Image (cartoon, rainbow, N blue to C red; front, side):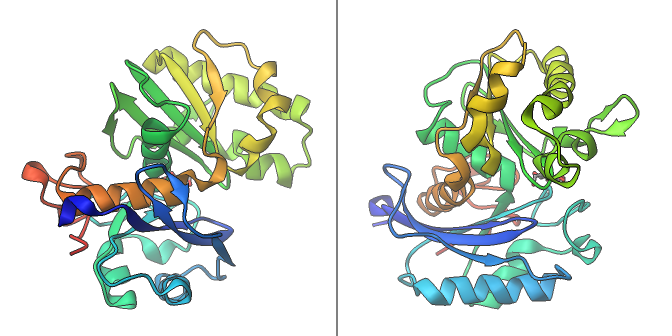
Amino acid sequence: MPSAITTAFGIDIGGSGIKGAPVDVTSGELRAKRRRIPTPQPSTPEAIAEVVAELVDAFDPDPAMPIGLTFPAPIKHGIVPFIANLDETWMGVDVPELMSAAIGRDVLGVNDADAAGCAEVRYGAAKDVAGVVLVSTLGTGIGSGLFVDGTLVPNTELGHLEIDGHDAESRAAASIKDDEGLSYAEWAPRLQRYYETVEMLFSPDLIVVGGGVSKDAKKFLPLLDLKAPIVAAGLRNTAGIVGAAALAAEAYRGTGPRGQNAAGPGGRPTAGARDPR
Ligand code: BGC
């Protein structure tokens, strides 16, 4: 029975690593230690599809297990409209179609921050939080997942807000902190400028900060002065894998969000989110 699905496989494609693990979608916990393979360079569609196939093969998930995959760019009806942090040949590619062909089974594709946000809303720091929640991921780029009473507004791309004449993520992403060798105290004013702008525009009730650097949240969140509470992600950097798996399971059951990247109207997956059956 579709409703009996309790495990789904999640894959998280990032600028530096591609990670995967089976996920218990009732608890949001990984069912096995995740595997990570460095993102190939150049990060072309073909090269990444090969790594995704290798990851799936390594776990050999049950053929009935839904598979969800995150991607570090917007995914509109399956298609990548623009790409900031992987090879530019991704532009115009149908991600679920390419990945489904590479692994020989249907895959749901979703923006990485939208997936991480869904995980935080279902199992983590934003669970049962009403109102406007922004889940912000700090990594190679800055991702955003915007929720209203738990419902996702997909593909918000708030890392690309232009602030003080800069693409925001080119100043404030965690990768920039590393590249420029900034301390947390030196990085914090850039985060302050970013989050105060987002706060002015969206009036969130809660901001959740994810991405690998969120494990050090105590070192930089207390340096920020915002109206809304700003807290570290509950799932840290497994949120992408968990969110992708959860959305794939929901699409399988027909209970997923009616956004463009998950189950469509009537619970049927849209072109952007191939039905994992
Ligand atoms: C991309 C977003 C993504 C974020 C984090 C940005 O550059 O445009 O789609 O969510 O990086 O990976």
